[in-house]
Length: 129
Image (cartoon, rainbow, N blue to C red; front, side, top):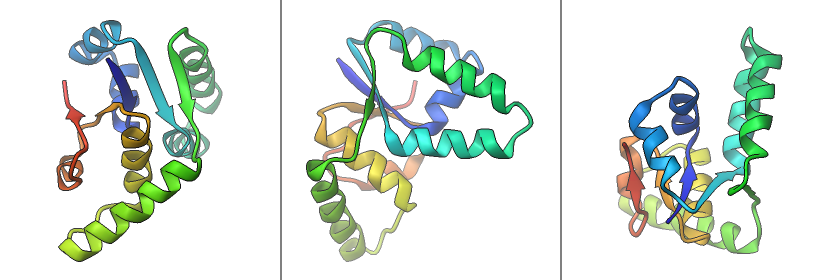
């Protein structure tokens, strides 16, 4: 199974959330969208533990089976389609989360997140261990 981490999932993992750790030990691939990395780096810059957080993220990202998901044409097209769907439905969600959902869907991964609004995206499989 392939999973894609949302920012809040990475944060919970770093706090030692046991059910998430167990899940991640059982998957084949862990994808981290570039948008999530951007949110994490922004948080690091604004926080008091910048260097320690950057070090932990580098260690995590360098593990076998962990990969950064870049925004390519497929992700961008899916993002556009999701924007249209959410606008027609009258159910907007944060822009970065639409990018994260588009990346997860484009690579065929299940999104690991604790944000309920991802349920508004049809076809997105979400895990919240």
